[in-house]
Image 1 (cartoon, rainbow, N blue to C red):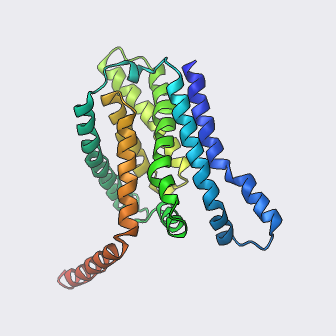
Image 2 (image 1 turned 45 degrees about the vertical axis):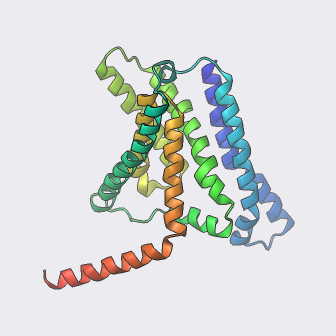
Image 3 (image 1 turned 180 degrees about the vertical axis):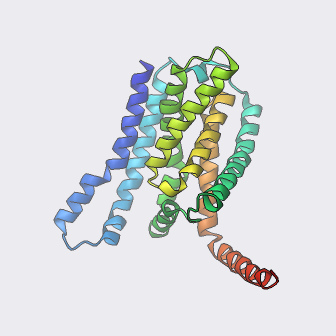
Length: 254
């Protein structure tokens, strides 16, 4: 029965992702001259509403069943340890993101900027309500989907009678959920970064036995990114310009 609830969580996520398609077709049919930018602007309130409803639904589904997965049936961290792991998890997530980003840029030769992040920031500037989607609704839905419904169910399928089997179960479940996580964001040049984040969130889920931990870390991570890309955008541009000037000066002596 638990798998049915997990499937319902995934279906809710898909419904939220494609909810704007029929609405967009209606708007286009009513006004064929509507440009892409104008259409996106009209759809923003509906996207916020669909994510809000989807968040409520996945939380309700996630708390309906009593047959928890292997992770949540095990020992769970207490309040203090949970808080420590949330704080430590933010640092762990950023360190892994930096490491994956360096490999992605200097080894794989992929671009620094994520098109997905750029598009999201543009949406936030056009509709500040999108902050709720990016910082709150999105992380909650995604953790229920990718951690509990996908990672948790795959982790449940693999025997964990030894340490080796536990590590194997974690790696396999993390890989599958991480790749789907990357595909869901449609950002294929940054798959390594999404995969590293997925492993960190999954590790926090397993080590604490609480879905709340990766949810909170995901919320804080997205919140900090939005803060940096909006409030401190000018500062970041100035810092990048100074760095480029320093690089130019250093290159003269090499």
